[in-house]
Image: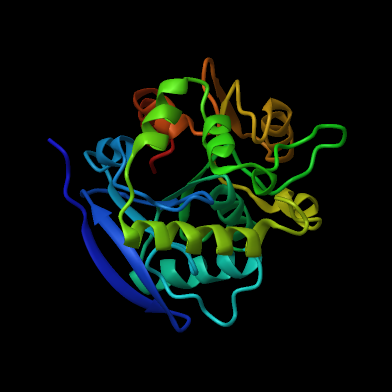
Length: 262
């Protein structure tokens, strides 16, 4: 049975923030990638069977406000520290994909006191010398969507989906904020890598073997930089393992989270 998430609005740091919530249990805060949250995805439904899943729209994305203070990913990290405090969350499983994973890592180098685990899925945020990244800002929408997946049927389904006028407006808004946060420098912070050693909590890194946005050497770099981290690479999978391999991702995440329960 598909869960029906509740939608609420919470004002944090002067930013009216749109939240989706479903399920019960230990809280999981999911930070979305640059495309925003288009729908309550199957992996979210399955996670909410065992956890209280909280999925906000980042500042400037979806139905959340565009605050005057939003300049970079680091601002989002501080914002989410405030949001976690405002929600009274403790022993939180923090997870995210792409720029959402980058935000999660930036948060974790600053304060892990309310976190139980960290999960990074196809994370942006670091540069690997000699390894090129794809550039969605230089792609057409179709090229970008096709680059996200190993299995072309996922891309076909996304490209065929009809969007309402409101959804078109949200997509443009997401694209604008995505560029604002990740345009320069492209998808990395020159300061993040030198502070990653401060992440001292159980960390799971999940990657698609066929990720064309951030290739597997980026996964290996994150694994090397975060002491004691666990790396899972999914075969026949692109940039969105939580979408393309939803059952495998939920099983991996649940096993990891339960092992680290204290």
